Length: 69
Image (cartoon, rainbow, N blue to C red; front, side, top):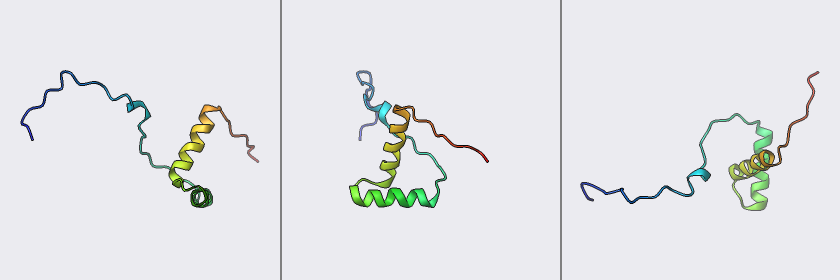
């Protein structure tokens, strides 16, 4: 390894905006089992399926409709 590196001509990562951010979230076991079963069918990890579903909701501006009783 070099002692010093020259980054004066470096460029920004064009994919940096698409990087994922790790968070902690509480999800019901029923929802996790649903996405795990779907993952077995599709070959896509259940975490990615959840992410794709949330992205779809955000892009289509879906809103949850529910009533408190």
